[in-house]
Length: 226
Image (cartoon, rainbow, N blue to C red):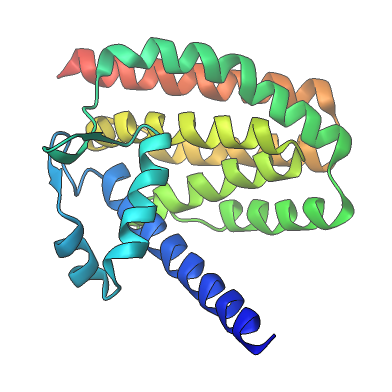
């Protein structure tokens, strides 16, 4: 019995370290600190993070499912390429699924989920885009979207949207310094969150659709200007 309890505790600790490794490596991939095409050395990553190789390897497996890394036999694991041509494909999916998640969240979100979204909305309202770092901006954006996905209470939809939001974020990072009005992109979240909190399914879906389309247009303009 004691051995079983110890194994359970060890497994929980290992999973926790794997989660930490996953989030740390994911953020570096999203921010392009790990550049597209770079080799990910699990020994070096484990050393940088201060954990063993096992949590890092588990994290890399999850990141491969997210299509942020790709593994090749006898060659290693590499950060996937950021293909701007994928923007249209990603936007096509998000234009359909983001409104679905927003409208569903407006309809089914629990009282606690709506309270969490209110906290997120207040964070957006008080956020100073002009003084914030890129990392802070991206984390707030992720907090908004992932809060909506969680409030929609459909784990399968949540998994898919997190994956495509991550892919969109990498493309966003390529042109972040060329986007003329980043504050508008951040501020748009306020009305979207309010519609979900108020239970307005139609408005939530429409604002989510507009937000995704606006993101694609802004990225395209920045790319064209370059």
